[in-house]
Length: 141
Image (tube, rainbow, N blue to C red; front, top):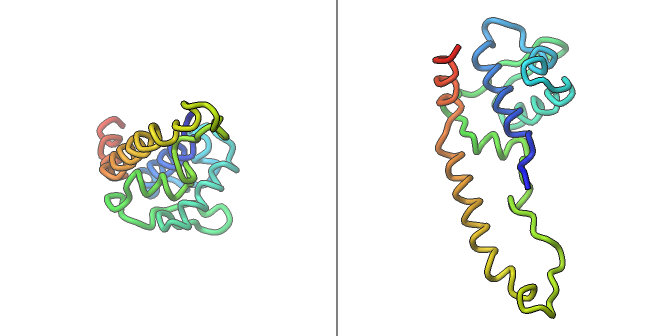
């Protein structure tokens, strides 16, 4: 199972906005050309990022600008803002057979490990800020 691409699209979008907001008008078309997706995807992403307080969007084709310091936005913040996962990262198969000893016990032996794995991933996302990525990116461009 994969996490949706919403996280990477949102991070790409925020990196573009933070790096180029003083150089270009950051419209959904401009951002979409870099992300290589339909501008509608970017507009939806920007709405979620705006709702989270990360960006401001000027009406019409005014473009986007950062609303929050990049060092105060973690990858986890972005991950939750764009709804990459609802609830558990791992989608458990429905209705294991309660008459089977494995089916009857699968949750009790596996759920804890899956929860631990999701927590570890989320803790890692909490340890990286958008500012960390901006600084890495600036060294490359």
